[in-house]
Length: 457
Image (cartoon, rainbow, N blue to C red; front, side, top):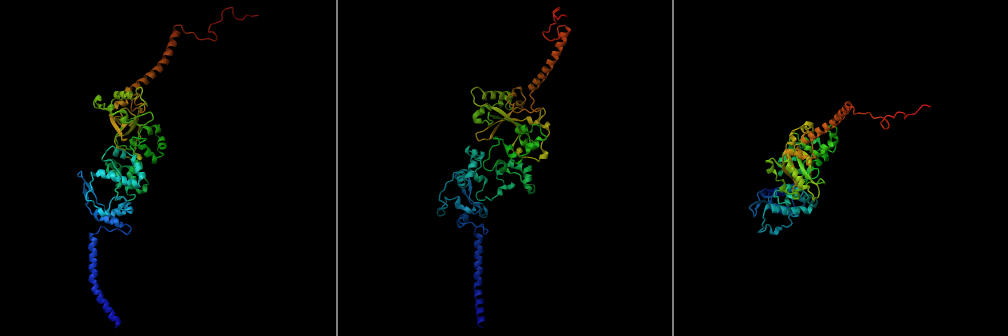
């Protein structure tokens, strides 16, 4: 009986608590719908971060700037919780923000670019080594030159969504934001094809050849060849098996010139000093290159180039200026359209024949203040004019850059050699016919006088 009474009390209590439990559950559901996105147990933002995401986690949050532009302030909470910066939290980078007085009544931001450059210094606090590398790069040089499109840290790395190793995927390469044409060319190359085929092993992406932070212009050093040989270290030996003067070819022909078989090729003549250091526009003076008007709009001609070199190497000038010639492809995207080695050019006639297409496009280049190459169009006659004997002595392709005066001099040398032999024989025959030829004899060359010889006893 006592047990029955007890059970009756429990049942009455449950009937009373039921609506309360249901109402409590409904309230929790409503709160969850209005709360920030849920996170996994190991991806829950800290309490302070949740307070920040209460506002910044709302899509469409932005700020109008003084110059009329818009600064996006939305931070997806679920992505930030997975990022490498989640452990340091919002205050790790935004230590100047006081939640008790945030947002401030007035905070003027002049421009989005100015804000980005200022925030870059925060990256330096933790990533000093990478920042130092970046400061030596072409990107930093462009920033210092005032280029508004030059990338800084946050242009390549979204600070709220950096996922470890995500940039290694081809479709996530940040370089494509600025270098879309090159990225498209690379996507169709054999490197990208191998990268997508995990069973074929390693293949490079942008940062493997150009580095991620200390990106240098291709005009410096050995250029892209150094990157190619970093992986293909046995390339020279492999070419020596079939290519005559392989080492010379490696010096004056870039890899893409043969391994991007459908690209347009050109000859680039770079002005360098006696130490093989590229000459800069600030050293030489750009007005010296404004010579197209004197060449009927066809670019710098042989005479102009000859006069230019005479001016640069006049008496009293330190360091001789010479030209270093290389056969290259015409554009940056073409340099990345690398095909499988079975399709590479291997026919000598492509270059070593008169009128070769590869030698119809010529540029003369220097290095600009930011380190990038500055190209000036040149007339194709700079490769085969009589005035080019000295200027392109470092780039002479047999058959491809025929200089007619060399052909004449060679013919004259052959004729002169043959003429000496024929003339010598002809004179000898003539002297014999005229009786002017006397064979040489031993001693003085004269017969002994009569009666001067030995006498019999």
